[in-house]
Amino acid sequence: GVPSSLPALLRATRLGQKASSQGFDWQQVDEVVPAVREEVEEFVEAAASSERGAMEHELGDLLFSLANLARHLQIDAEEALRGASQRFTQRFQHIETTLSQQGLRMNEVPPERLEALWQGAKAALVDSE
Image 1 (tube, rainbow, N blue to C red):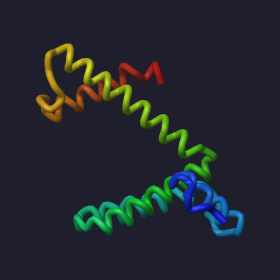
Image 2 (image 1 turned 90 degrees about the horizontal axis):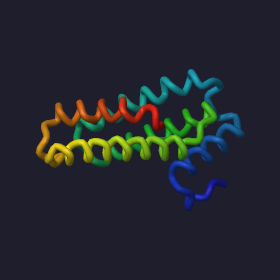
Image 3 (image 1 turned 30 degrees about the horizontal axis):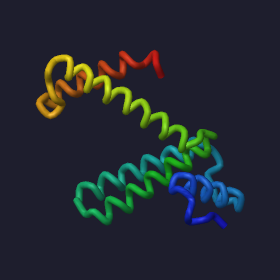
Image 4 (image 1 turned 180 degrees about the vertical axis):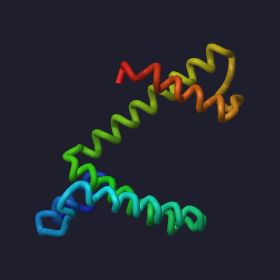
């Protein structure tokens, strides 16, 4: 009853809703968090194997469990992801601008410096979020 043509994040949410309506669901949100942690661990194990199929499988399970966490928290997962993407874009552009003003390109800067710039962008842009 849940169209496979829906965007994946929305379909995951709807599948969770449908399963819940049939009584197949966690009763409380604090039961979902351990499931998410379990999926993270399974992904880490798959990533250690470097087997692409296993990593894709476990990443899918992790994303599905996160969609269900959002559903339990009554958070629109699509909106949450859209907001995170926007914050990333703003921070990345802040770093680009900072480096450009210093006459540098991002691929010329060591990772530690990029991390410091990232943290600075997060602090500088916290008021605009």
